[in-house]
Length: 239
Image 1 (tube, rainbow, N blue to C red):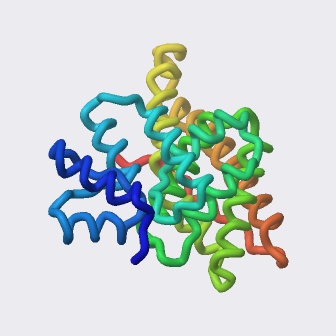
Image 2: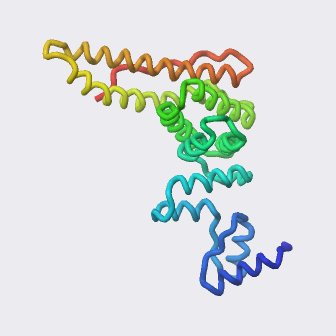
Image 3: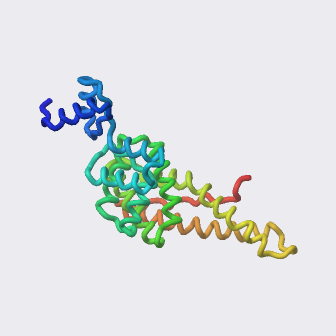
């Protein structure tokens, strides 16, 4: 391995001051540890530690993660917060930054369970924070297209259905819980609870239909075929 003299200077400086070597190159960190005993850490792990210890803000952490994604560091971890931060910065426009985050999320090597968790949270939080329905549709059209490019054999409809099934119960229950008490207070003593519950369920159905409508449109835009529409798993919330 041929390295620039500054690399060895950095190792010696870290060793002399008993510090940790900050490097985003794994072989460099491994060599430093093996040759001199200097421990190393990469940028995202360092800022995560700073976030946990409350030395930086969540926005600071997301800014670093977005910068790493833009630079093509494909071992960068992304989550819903990273996406929402980048979307706020772009006013929900689909920029190269958003596309870089999508490319990281859609990598075939990623843990499918973790990917579904990120998509589900983004589906839920994104709906609450979107400027309008079209922006939400644009985001998921780009997400589904990213998965189609990275994983040509990926069943986009199954991916969307599994994700929506994971989030629908939480999203719609939150809506029920938020509105049920208000509806009871605004009703009279003669109003049956069943009537109030039916009105809330109707609202839940309208919201759910809007979400699935946006997701179905996103699937059509990302696909070369006419996918079967997503089903709306809406019923009475479980106690």
